[in-house]
Image (tube, rainbow, N blue to C red):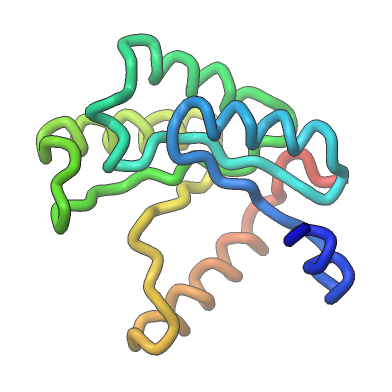
Length: 139
């Protein structure tokens, strides 16, 4: 199991990131079972065209769970356009609003890859954000 190997290697905590309602529900359930796992809930831009009418309200409800520490994975992905751009924008705006209301950070699907020149900037900004705000659900 990947988590067991990571623990054995010294990893002390995990965030299980949902990319649609089903995976967000699984993330919350896993976080409820494991003391070193937290959850992020949201709908990835590729998935918004398949999201049901009640999907956003389900994500909103999941966001209130004690061990949810972020909204996402969300964002905009116009490279493949698996969902219409206008619908991606609408969902991204709604999830940003939800994050603001819930006081949670956002997991944006456009995190830079190592070697991209932006990785170090991202790491520094992320570390600063974590220090500036206590994470909900931490023991």
